[in-house]
Length: 615
Image (cartoon, rainbow, N blue to C red; front, side):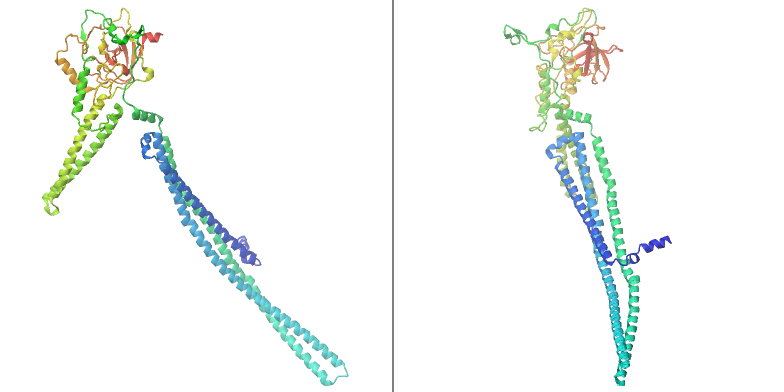
């Protein structure tokens, strides 16, 4: 009952049988609303495309320029580049949304609105036709009713005339009969008009019944259907729009996840290290500026040679009955002339034009460039080797089966490839030699600024009580090269910028040159005492149990150079300080548990003296 009632109530034909004009206006407004929604989606597509286009222009404008490529080695810049890429992908998804809305919604809305207009026009024409039929029946009924009224009046007048004539005794019988005949004729005409009116009334009522119960409800039902179709499709269009958005959500979320991942990849410590790697020169900081005493307005340094450590030569240590050990091979393992000759020998064996060897760069940057060049040449050599192997296999196949090809056609390519491979290998060998020299010239890493305690004067560093013993050093041991102590100058003419301190393999030319020089010194009888103004090996005397002056902590690992005077140490290891740096870059230490003693680079340790700790 209820469902039937609802069905009847929802039928425009029964509920709105007299609202033809309003229903016609309503369906027109509905189609106009459909057009309005279609225009909305169309404008939204334009906005999406414009948004995507502006995003793409934004991404393009902020892409790194060629001159900015070096700046994009940092994690923040790399993350920004990744963010731009993800934003470009995000813009692409907005374009996908616009395209799908255009094809799935805007186009369909336009077609549906056109279809509904045509159907509405057709149904309204049918309704107008049915209304014309009803109006025609009503007009016929009205004409029949007027004819019947007219005939009834004439019949009544004819009856009155007959009655007056029949009552008038002055009229002849013929006149009375004439009035009687006229009365009967009018009465018959009135009856005929009455019957015609009644028949037309029946027909009109039937047409009216069919019009309001069948024909017009059918038209209204058609209008109702197209209106419901319009509403249902608007619902589907909205759902389709949502579905278009939902389909791109996974990719958009991937873009957002990529942006988040790019942001999380930023590492300030890594960027800090990248700055160090990029700009680190490899030079050591300058030595302390010596005190220049003025006497009578004249600089004493003009007339007296400056030897800051000569006054310590005889006072460092005491002579005892213990064994004597030479310090040869540590400070005087090379002379300045030997180092320069070795560097020039290496340079003369290399043919490098212009700045191909990166000699204009600091040591550390030069090393990085040479490493990159060596890697590039290694890849090229590997490619040429693979190509050469392929050509050789092809030549072998042609020789086995001449029908496949002429082996001589491959011979020229093979020779060309071989020549190119020889050139590449020659270049690779040349740059490997340059890299080896650069590796030997890179200075040792400096300690943390707060850990350096080498600013003390030589007197403070070597001041020991009467019960303490120390090694005696020569002022000439402060540097291997002439300018190393003050300016840290270059030791090699072939672009070498490393500074030599104390003859250490880690601070000058390094392993190979140091080894050859050491062998040469011992071969020439360097184990006996001798005096030389420039390259003398001074004896030093020490007691096995020297009093420690303090302690130190290793900032970097250090490997002994094999001369017997240096000592290996691990990073973080704590050692006892027996003798502080006297300007030659080396500190004498002792391992507490093994009583092993030796020299380690001063820049590799953080020293704390007992006297400083008490203050």
